[in-house]
Amino acid sequence: MAKVKIVADSTCDLPEAIIKNLDIEIIPANVIFGEQIYSHYDINNDEFYQRLKKGAMSSTGVPSPKVFKTAFDNAFKTSDELIVFTLSKKLSAMFQTATLVVKNFFDERVTIVDSETVTLEMGLITYLAAKKAKEDASKEELLQYINEFLIPNSQLLGVVDTLKYLKKSGRISTISWLIGSVLSIKPIVRIEDGLIKSPGKVRGKEHALEILELVAKKIVTNKKSNSIVVGHSHDLKRALEFEKIIKELPDAPTDILIGEIGPVVGTHLGPGAIGFAWIGNFEEEWIK
Image (cartoon, rainbow, N blue to C red; front, side, top):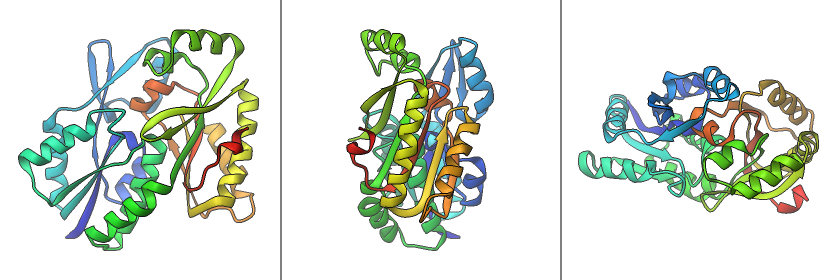
């Protein structure tokens, strides 16, 4: 039986093959179209983004405490202790709900960790923690690795193709949306202090992609891990192009993951987003 098992909510957006290979237990968040509530994996990414492209608008929701308890019970069938990652508690009530479930039904064998981020960056943290757990690291060793190395050094940077979904979810104002839409402004987004921030904006998709290519070179130069995620929201072709760019760089990382942003985070970003998650440094000068 495994000493420690990694559990994460589904906004980590890890590919199913990795989830299965590393035996990660997933807590599915909810995606809502009208009055229809879907558990994260009850609607696949392709169907979700096709609905958005046809004009449907989705929202998201925290699963019931019962869903958390079921996930924890399942995880304990093959482990002694759990480390549970949630997306940033500043973005959702997942952390608070998980904490409540542990308080009422479990004990110190379950440790809830606020990843302070979401999607690709949370996925990378989860992935690297699960790899270390597979090496039979103790819970104390894992928590030190997570809290002192992974979370403080994790980074995410991406470009959103349209402001429509950020506006709908209340992440930007109507005025910003109108100006951005008229001028074809593409916001550069990252996670800072557990919140979605925009350290810069560029005009036009091609200029945005040029910025990302320059950033890729900086990431590789300043990386602290050989694992990097190239992520996208229903634009695999572009993600593979960036994977190729990274592989051809001097001292390229040896472990490049391709991840698709799932329905929960995709609700807020929409289709066409592209970005990176890595362990290392970031300087705002990289995007100036």
